[in-house]
Length: 328
Image (cartoon, rainbow, N blue to C red; front, side):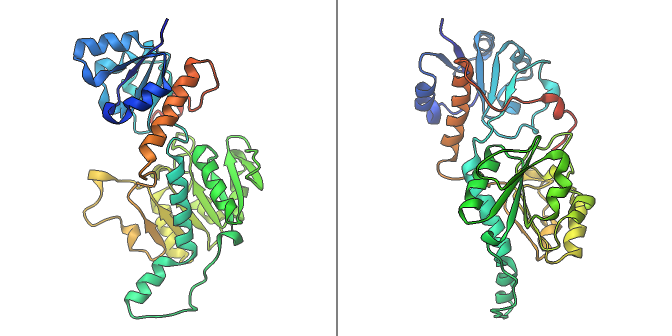
C-alpha cells in the first residue's frame, strides 16, 4: 500500500518537481488545493506531513489531528516559535536539522571575520576623517580558537569553514562531540571550562528550557576580554542586559548578532540600543538566505521523510518537553 504524505506548505509551484522526485511511489496530497472537509480527510489518511509554517498553515482543529500521523516534518530548523499547547499530546514532530546550514555557516564566518578585522570601527573612523592604518588589533581566523556551541548541522558546516582557514575548532554538545573537524569536543556539563580559552564563541543550538539565557553575566565573565560572540541561533540564548553591560565594560569584546529579542513587526522604531555600541554588528535574522537556500532546506526535509518511511535513520526528533515555557 502506498504511503500517504500531506503537504501543508503552500509551495506547490516551487516544490512539486522536487516532491515528486524525493517521494516517488508515495501518494502526495497538497492541502492548499483542498477545502476544509477534504483537508481533514487527507490529514487523517496521511502517514506523514511536511509543513513550512506549522503555526499558520493548519487550523486549530487540523492541528489536533496531527497525533494520528507517524511523522510531522517542519521546513524550519528552529521550532521554539511553535505553540506546543495547540498540538495534541504525543505528536511526533521532526525539525529540519541542518536544512539551512550552508548559508548560516558562511554568515557566521563572515560575522566573525568582520569583528576580527575590525570592520565597523574602521568604517566609523574613516567616516569621521580618521585614516589610522595601525590603530586596530586585527586578527586572523587561523590565530583563533573557535568554540561552536551546538554541534548539529549548522555547527558542523561552520566547523568545516573555520577549519579550512586554519583555525582551531572545538565544539560543545550534550555529550562531547567526536569529529575529525574538531581539535576537541566538550560535554555541556563542562561548558564553563570550554568558554575560558575561546577567541570566538559561536552559538548554533536551539533555545530550550535548558539553554535559555545560558550566556549571562557569569558565563560572559569566563570569556576572554577580547573574545567575539556570534549568535545565529536564537536571541533567547543570551541574557540581553548582561550582554549590554559586558560590551560596555569590555570594549575589546565583540558581539555579532543575527537574532534579536524583538523581531519583525516588534522591532523597535529606533532600533536596538546595542547597535549604538561600536563593538556590535548585526543582521536582520537572515543568515540562512541565499538563492539556493529554500531548495536545499526542502530537499533536506524531504530526505528525512523518505528515510523515515523506509526505516532508515532520521534526524531532528523534537523533545517537546524541552520547549514548553522556553520562550523565544
